Structure formats: C-alpha cells, structure tokens
Length: 397
Image: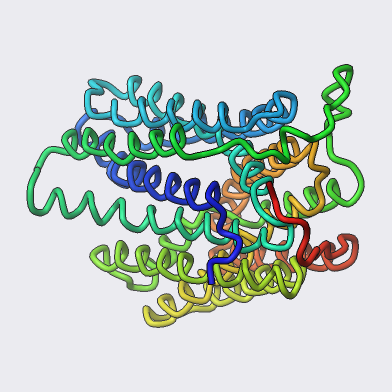
C-alpha cells in the first residue's frame, strides 16, 4: 500500500505533520488574540495576512531557482523550517500588533524558503511512476497536522490552561521536533546532485518555463483566479443556518475528507494518468461551487463540504506530480518555484474578485463565477496539455 514512500518522503511527511500541528495550534486563535488581547482591528489582521502570503509567494520562486543553482535542497529546507519553528511561538511574548506582524512576516519567509526545494526534493527522491503516491502521502500528512493542531489547542484550553500565550509557547515543541527530523534524517538526493548544471549566464527571463510546462502553469493560474479562499464557504454555511458551534466541527470534517482522499487519488494517478485526475478534480470543484450557489439547508452544506473535499484529494498531489513529470530534473526546483508563485499571486485577486461579486450580485453569482473559471481551465487543460503519465521508471537514488 505504501510503495514509493521512500525515507525522504516519509520524513518530510512527518515534518509537515508536526509543523502543521505547531502552526494550527496558533493560527485559528490568532484573530482572537490580536483583536481581544492586543487591540488590533480586522483591517490590520487583513494587512498582516496579505503581507505574509505575498512574501511567501515570491520567496517560493526564488528558493526553487536557488536550489537548482546550489544542486542541494536540504539546506534550504532546513533553514526554512528552522526559521518558522523559531519565530512562530514568539507570538506568546508579543506585546503589540506590530510584533505579531513581524513574527508572521518571518514565519512566511521560512515557508517561502522551504516549500519549493522541499517539493523538488520529494520529486527527486521517488521513482517517477510513483510521484502521485509520494505527493499524496505528503499532503495527507499535512492535512492530518491541520486537523490535530486545532483540536490539541482546544483540548489544552478546555482542560489545562486558560491563557492563549501558554498554548502559543507549547506550539514550539512539535516545531522543534520537525527541525530535528530534517537535520538528522533527511538525505540529499543523488538526482539533484548529478543533474546538469544550469548555464551561469542565464537571465531571469530565461528561467521562465517554456512549452508544455508554461502552458500548464498558465492554466493553473487561470483556475486559481476562480479558486477563492475557503473562508467564503464557511460564510455561506453560516448564512444557511450552520451554527457557530458547528462551524469548527464542519471544518474538521472537511479536513478529514481531504486527509483520507489525497493519498489514494494520488496513487491512482500513477496508474491512470495525471491529467484525467486533475480534470476530475476540477469537475468536482465546479459542481461543488454550483451546489453552494443553490444550497438551501444545513444538511446540504455538510454534503457539499464532503464532496468538495474530494477536489483536494484529486488534485493536490496530482498537480505536483504532473509538474515534476513535465520539468527537466536540472530545473525542477525552478518549476516548483513558478508553480507555487503562480498559485500564490493568483490567490489574492481570486478572493478579491469573489468577494466583490458576492457583494455586488450575491453569492449565487460569485459561486457561478468560480465554477465557470474551473470549467474553462478544464477545457484548456484537456486541449493543450498532454498527459505525462510515466509508469514505472528507474528507481530514484
């Protein structure tokens, strides 16, 4: 069942699990801490998140290219996780909103530095015909951490502590364990060490992907423009009668569906091909959004969240596996950099567009817009991007 889960893939999956436990012990409580303890307003919260995510998107591109130049992934992965794990729990001693801004900024610098080299290292460390399994496993571990983190924080607040700062401080423990795992257990892949060097005279424009890879990234960017933050789904749930008490349960249920589906669908893409799985996922997305537009009761919201979770299962690992299939090994870090950059810079206008359409024309129009862009992206993917299913290749070093 776990064929293709090499040592690096297993350790990096555990690292993502522990890091998400640490992060999600803090992140859901951060708005309450900022507004209720430090006296910040909603606008400042939005500013913090906008600065943090924009920084991460740009650094994901730079670090991916840099890892190709260095012919080494592990130092950037270790530095990125190390920085985030050190600064994130410092929220416990923050005395004002500006301190939280600095901490979130440094945390996202760490995420930006590590993400693309980590994804490239996963691709380097596994047989090409098993990349769907590898990325599916990694995403499943990530979702498991996102599920455990808030539950752990809630349990601590309910049974042991009453001060949010203590919870934030305790979040340092899983973060530290993650860094130790990288330092002690992750190994550099021979695939990146032996890859042909990139010409040192390349300009930045020459590092922009070409051919099928460029077309794939542009289509992903188009899809992202219709893929707004899932916070709007929670807003829709609240409109249709899901109580504040049930919202966290609904969100946890959503994470369970994602966690349970991403590995098997990733593995299935190794057998049936990547493009078909992504097309199925985008189809699920479009149908789910149309469902959210027409939903009228709470039970329909629960059913739609379960169905929508399959979109993540079908696409999260498979999109990255297809990217690794299309990229030259010597430019794999850069390819993941562009992938993460495209999704990162598309996320902000996507949410702004969705929110504006909702406010001006109602939720039905906003969800219809998202479904329409997903359908358009699916047609383009089917038309201009070939399926690069590779089957079983030579074992990765």
